[in-house]
Image (cartoon, rainbow, N blue to C red; front, side, top):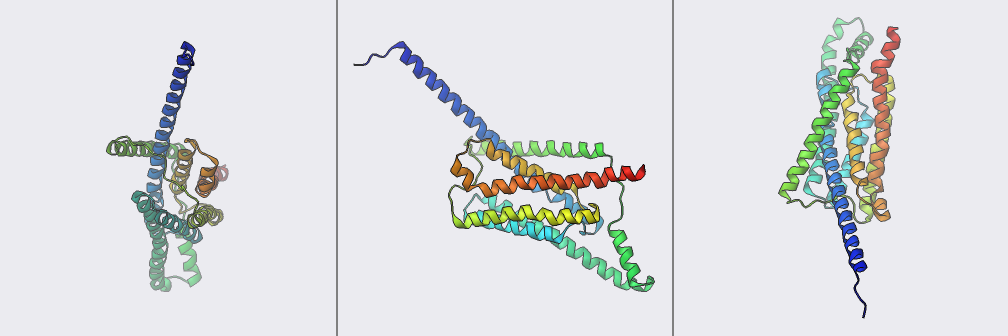
Length: 293
């Protein structure tokens, strides 16, 4: 018969304390993951707003590459299809559908403002010496140089918006926890390897990554005129917080393999978004300082 000594009680107590600490740490990580996921969702809800407003103010969508919008739309359609096939939460499906609607709205703006300019240009041909001169005048108007706000003002403006989004995302999570009675869960991702969802996931990721390339090329031509930096700024923040929401929770190898497409699509696009923001900074401030000197 084994005797239960004081050392055994000490070992049991230590084991219990360590397990309780591990559970508490895991719970904190799950909370952090859900908060980051809510902030990411908030970023993606507002990501289209700056460009939609920019297009409306300019009455033109020529700052956008059509190939960029179409490729992004294809990625969002794959994302929507994956959410439906995977039977994800209704909120996830609704948000995926919202993305496709916003992409379609951007396309509508581009073609609508082109049609509007075309209908206004035809009656005005008689007032121009030639059609070529009218086209040149139209192009100059479309990409006319506009005064840029001070760099410090831009940084402060976006910092304030980031704080508001972070508070909104965190508040949304807290409210949802109150209604769910504190039943935290990790972000909804793929839990089983299915061919359909894997194909859709990798297609979506490749579309998100590849969509930036034609836009980067167009920015070299237009010097980022007509393009809203907020579109890529919020996309970058949304991808960063989404990736962090996955990484803060312990993951096994199979989990990473199942969700590699979503992780890759979020992380790689951040690099291109930073490059686009660098184009904004160069064409908006650095190149103008060189010209002024």
